[in-house]
Structure formats: structure tokens, C-alpha cells
Image (cartoon, rainbow, N blue to C red):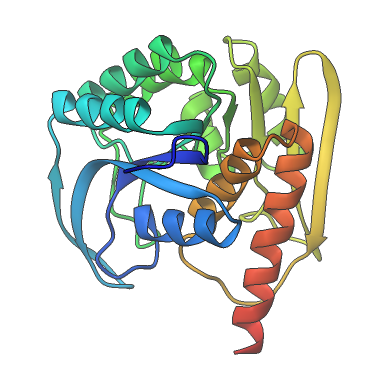
Length: 253
């Protein structure tokens, strides 16, 4: 029997058989922050660290049923959304979120794998921006994802990224975290945009090398801290620190 008084994060996303990203990485992150996780699986993938070999989608009704069961069974205090795969799944997830407006949702808009395999149908991008993103508390695109969502070329510099972010925010989003991991320079900066406040900047030294699943980790860490009742800006700061520490560990090992 679930202990209903404990806060949970509902993880909505796809599996990664290599363990490098997806719901496995999400659960690992959320658990390490001291919050429990429950699941709605949108897709099962066959992956190594180098390539995605197969993708098998869940039906939209199955995804919605999993979400509703998790929300009924547990004290879900935040929702983390990753791979959604199809426009129909996007619509189904958005419909559930509208029934639970009190639960903050963090969307990591997964469009492709690290190896370049498309993980969201091109036709689903418009549906995501129209139906899903406005009902999420925070959307966390990297610079490549930001350009796709904004329907433009990748940002040439930080000012260009901010312009794209503000244009996207004006479509009805509550908050946007522009991730700077794909930029260049000695420091990696993420910028939180909200209508009613000045941009908040979170930066750290840029570390050599790369780790799969950093986007999953960041969004999951933010969701876990929101579930522990931290304000949004504090949750983003703590999430950024969590990912930086994990990257440091990887650089040492």
C-alpha cells in the first residue's frame, strides 16, 4: 500500500534500455533527492549508448490511464514529462494535466536522441506548443529544441536565444528555462524566463566531455525539488547544481 502522505513525482516518458536516459535516469535522479517516483510509460525503446534501434509507442489511452492511476494512488506533488513520441500522446497527456491544474508539470521537450534519432513526430511539435506547453509550469528546451519550438534557426548567441525564448513565452507559456549546454564558452548558462519577473541566470563552469541524459536529470531534479515545496527559481538552481555535480563526478571517473 502506498504511503499517501509522501510526495511523489509522476514521470511520463519513454524507457531507454541502456539506462543512459529516459525514465530510468529520471527515477535515479528523483530518488537521489529523496522523493518517490511513479510512472506512465509513453514508449519502449531498444537503445545502446550509441544508437536507438527500435521504438514501440504506447497507445494514448494507455498513457492517460497510467497517469490517472498514478495520480489517484499517490500524493503526486509534481509531474516530469519527457519523450512523448506522437501527437496523439501529446494530446492525451495535456488532457490529464488540465484535470489536475494544481500539480506543477515540468516538460523536457524531447525531440531527438543524443545520436540524432527522431523521438517526436514532426507533426507533434505544433500540437505540443499549442496544447501541452501552456499547461506546464516550466518547459526546459536546449538551444536546438528552442529553435524547433520557435520555428526558426538555432540562436547565434545568447541575445538571439533570449529573443526566441521571449517570443515562445508570449504564446502562452508560464515559464521557460533556456539551457545553454549546446552553446560555447567557458561557462554554461541556463536562463529562466517568466512574464512577471526579470530573467534569472544560472551558470557554472563548462566541463569537458558529455553525459547522456543530462536533460532528463535537470528536469527531474527540478520536479523533485518542486515536490518538496521549493519555489520554482530555487528548484531550478538546485537542479542545475545537481547536474553539475554529476558531470563533475563523470569527469573525475
